[in-house]
Image (cartoon, rainbow, N blue to C red; front, side, top):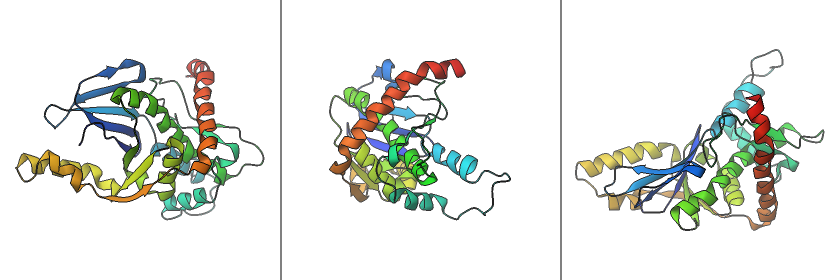
Length: 256
């Protein structure tokens, strides 16, 4: 609710949003602040097309695709299993890079033709590496938003609250902290963030609370600090990630 304090939502899609005291549009990065429920404030929204949707694709189209190769029944709580697998794979996924543009992208580039890709795959890689690469790729894509976001806000982001289904994953929260090199604050019961927000706005409407009371109602379960041992690795990975877009965008445009 406070100006310039962003949150990161990780669900089927993802976004970074923050309240600001001005209406503004950055066409080059597809960022804009729009009117919101709070008087004299605007909500900056930076939307990315798919985040957790990539994991749904991995689950339904790769791991448990219904064909002759499927032998076992579905594993209960598969996303918890993916977390467990990811945690035992080293940072960097043994060289794999995943670009999560499975349905194009909205920000920081508007490009409906780009697609997901798994790069640097070798005979030495395993399914476990691929799973971690998916999670890292989504975090790398989120980091791509940070430079235009900070330019829009006019200040550096030091910490960010994370909500949505993806925020339930401890290992993914740590990956976001490491790759983005900022504090990630895991909101308590993050899947209910939208419901709580609607309830608090309703409470303001009937005079039970004030908008200024809301920040104190947000509870943080855990804060994840960047692991500096991974900083140089992920900085290099990010350079490669953005280079992939520059090198591949014309090929995707031709294909799609």
